[in-house]
Amino acid sequence: MATATSIVRSPAALLFAKVTVSDHKPTPTIQISRFPSKRSCFTALLSSLHHDNNNNNNNVISHPKPLSSSQLFNSVSNGSRLRVAYQGVRGAYSEAAAEKAYPNCEAVPCDQFDSAFQAVEKWLVDRAVLPIENSLGGSIHRNYDLLLRHSLHIVGEVKLAVQHCLVANHGVQLEDLSRVLSHPQALAQCENTLTKIGLSREAVDDTALAAKHVALHKLKDTGAVASSSAAKIYGLNILAQNIQDDCDNVTRFLILAREPIIPGIQNPFKTSIVFSLEEGPGVLFKALAVFALRQINLTKIESRPLRNQPLRAADDNNGSKYFDYLFYVDFEASMAEERAQNALRHLKEFATFLRVLGSYPVDTTMM
Ligand SMILES: O=C(O)C(=O)C[C@]1(C(=O)O)C=C[C@@H](O)C=C1
Image (cartoon, rainbow, N blue to C red; front, side, top):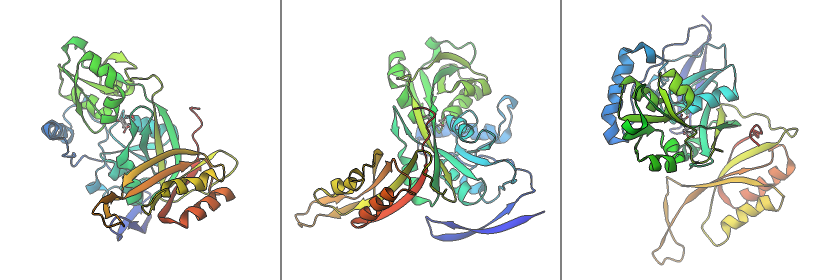
């Protein structure tokens, strides 16, 4: 058996972990070991689902189970097809995004976004495909925070048209439903429709997990907002199609890898950066001007709290406090272009922190 041992750097703790990568072992069965505990009323429901998963007592719904952080040391890559981690269970939109990015890949389900980041860092998979923003629901803040906490590189983006269905068990009518389960982003994208129907909403980790739960527990009063492929996988009936509030509902996913790609100039490229600034009048204006001065178009700006020092006293000592922010900016230029290099050199002169997250081809499939 050929094995390769590599040292992988865990940026969060600045620790070094030893990971063994084998290219001959078969892919191990990946199991759920825990569910997040954030949503209290839903915890019992989720743990019953967990129990069902582990007993594997329903062969209609026995699919590979998501990778959790605790299993990351026990799983190996078989070295054949490209392995692409996504968050969710089979039938999630993220799985479809992974398959759109890499049509012949082995899509590997992970229970949390963080597990997908770690799976790449520990060489268990080759890439991760994770949602970053949606045209209706906005940014997926958790992934912005994780991008900084981990040291992966953005090597591409993929845009996916998201068409939600209201799904339920066969024989269940719309008027039988009192609540609906789904991912918070999916619920937000269908806000108006769900309000009109008058259904109460409960959040779960992904849309396909919602469908799976409704099917597994043969629920009669609860439906799910999920994809038509999730309905098919879990044997559910589609009560309504295209229920998102706008028919042009697109989610943008990032493709993450251990190594950056060499930026090109032949195709349209985009670069993602994160930086922080001193407090003061016009500082953000000055930061954004480094791009405007060079005719570089910005496509996205997001601010997130700088977590290790969220509050700072004002210089004038009048007792007021400022929040500290990180600014995430996407701009339309490749790092191979001189104007992009000059812009970042200029920004570095006054930014208190700057990191290039990746320079990668623009997904032009939905333009
Ligand atoms: O729940 C899923 O199916 C996902 O893949 C997650 C997710 C998201 O996080 O935004 C992906 C696409 C849709 O916007 C809705 C949910």
